[in-house]
Image (tube, rainbow, N blue to C red):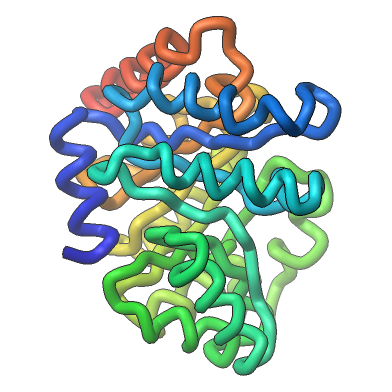
Length: 257
């Protein structure tokens, strides 16, 4: 069973497309407390989570102790819930092969995020793990500089992010796309260009994305969609309540879509 089949099953079992981001911001808590905090979040939100998404950088910034916390975190996720490693890699073939081994064989991630700028060469080593999932960064929206390149108009008459959606999804059926929640028009455009591609939609909650607008733009099919919230759930006084609130908002939006 590959990542997307597992995700489909999990989404149907929970009636949820909520992806819980596990991102410890520097200075918010001592590194020694990260693993225990993550375990509490996982235990509280597991009934409502379709997936967990630790961002590698938030652990790497703490050095070896942070990486140990990540190791404990991944091990704490129940086996029926996929773990998406938000690593955003993208490099030449030999380096990409090392990144792929690290992500899948060392850290045990079920899926990863990748940058497409260096083309298929940088993605191919990850495709050698057909049971895994890949989400290609397509159109971000939480950063002001997203339009610097992504909205650039190409000679073909389409924008760069549209070209990414067109090209990257031809590389393999295990490739999905990352599109930020604060850009619902672009989500709808990507969905039109790549109707069968799974979408990872970060940026709801603290980053200002409207979960309902995002899911209406993306459409909803189990296994085809993840809507990610990090700070809004991770630092909530009651993570379970925050996860339920997001799940129910997405359910209502899906019903109206």
